[in-house]
Image 1 (spheres, rainbow, N blue to C red):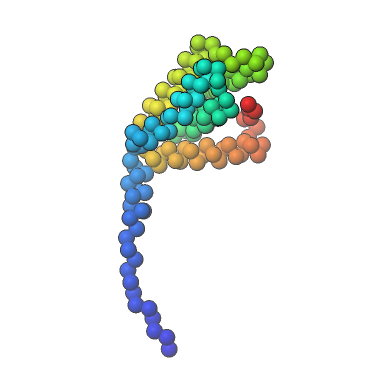
Image 2 (cartoon, helix red, strand yellow):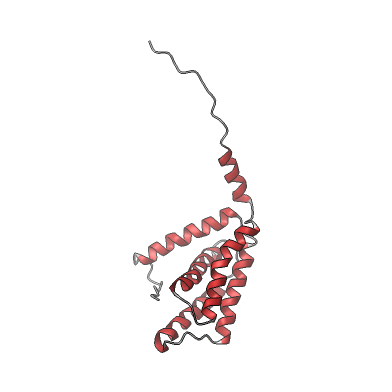
Length: 159
């Protein structure tokens, strides 16, 4: 007959406790700056007429995550109209650039893009880690659905 192993209690999982606390904690100032930096740089590059695909991708990423925050009432309420407006501005800019090969922006368009950056920074200052990562994950899932052709109202823009 074999002997049973002696019972040894498991050590407490500190990482689980850390994750629980972090999920309720707001983003740190360093996190906020790191997450806002790419889109701030992108808008500045776009404003100078130097916007490359990576710059526009940073803008699209923020729009996609804002789209998910709109569906989170604890983060952003009644933002659908604003989001539709900023998406329309971006589509208008890109369509005009394709038609005319001009990378110039109208002053109102530049103001709208900078306003989006300010909104992004404001939202980053109030969300928790859990809310941010949840929105990021949902945006990624929606993007995959759109790219697979499963969302009829979406428009895929090639830069």
